[in-house]
Length: 464
Ligand code: URP
Ligand code: ZN
Ligand code: ZN
Ligand code: ZN
Image 1: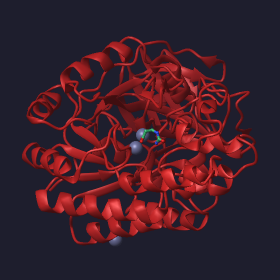
Image 2: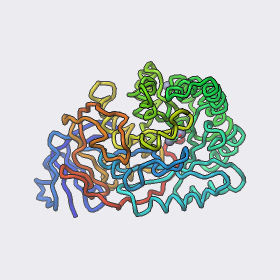
Image 3: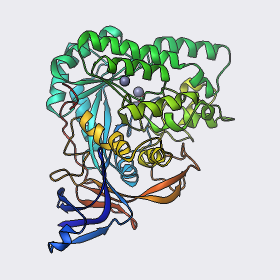
Image 4: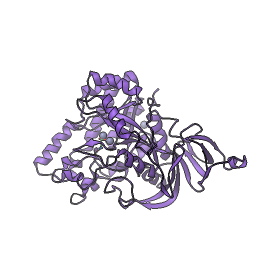
């Protein structure tokens, strides 16, 4: 099966150029100057006209939570619905989190997550491992996880009693990471201090959703980020700060990077576009915007955009963790601390970041880099993923940069009853998506299925 994508502008992390792309079965066979394939009499089974469109490597969302047990419920997207929504939005790889329960083993956790995902995903997927119980067995199992293609481990300085690890436990896991080359991903918020602030708020009758933001001040993300960086420095572990939302945290990351430490960070579209004003929406509406770290004051957004430009923020992921407003977010009616933490977004990352290109805040190359190429390298998938080049998987998005769309729960494909971006007007739209050479989204709709495969990942490719 040969597909020719012709007449488009091919994007990469280093720029844009007019080119035709030849796909053979699951792989990219060749990229050539416009017209070269046709002039050579190359026959294709299918020709996709990309005139006036961008042709870019499929997005890689390195932070999703499908059907995740959390907050007394499960995130609303299954691997099937969540990966289909990802495909609709031009994301052809997700890396989701397997969640070790306290007292559970990493390997049985990994088996359980394979049980949920295998045979159900519309696009390719990998796993990170959430380590919530550090002990001799767990540390040993980290090595086996690496052998099984899971090369990154998320730990939490937040959520005492749930996923929280002490500094000592973090240090032990980081030593193992230094020994093996694994990456430690950190949820960096000072959970002990936050829990105290939450208790004080509830005790004084402050129960509404905005309290979620007010009890998790940005300084406590800055403090935890600095502490994680220090622990990583002491142990030599590569460190990746997840869902960075605060200027203080960004400053700590930037300083560590300037000093040459292997510290990396991602941010998410919600921190670039939404703010604590959304958490403060009247009634219980703010619950739709409860996620941790919380949405910040608007002044943080300019810092995050700058960090994206300067590469102190290397990746944009979604932290997609959808809970329906009805029945799930409502678990926290009358007590903000019981609102399940998380927001939907896997479908809209490419579009939302494209608005940065439209506004002149990001280059086209940087858009592709932050949404595809860098996550591929960061999590050991490059050049199989993250680039349009001969030999790479044919995960390709044809994107119409001038189409207009309005985001809405009425039209999105995520299994959640609201959109955090309801009414957002977007310039640009995914037209066609190929997942390993198969068209899964086109102007006639979704034609994907459950052909997504598990991706066994190597170590971070930015380490010296
Ligand atoms: O609120 C969030 N971010 N929910 C998902 C779990 C996490 O901490 O990433
Ligand atoms: Zn987190
Ligand atoms: Zn710098
Ligand atoms: Zn998350």
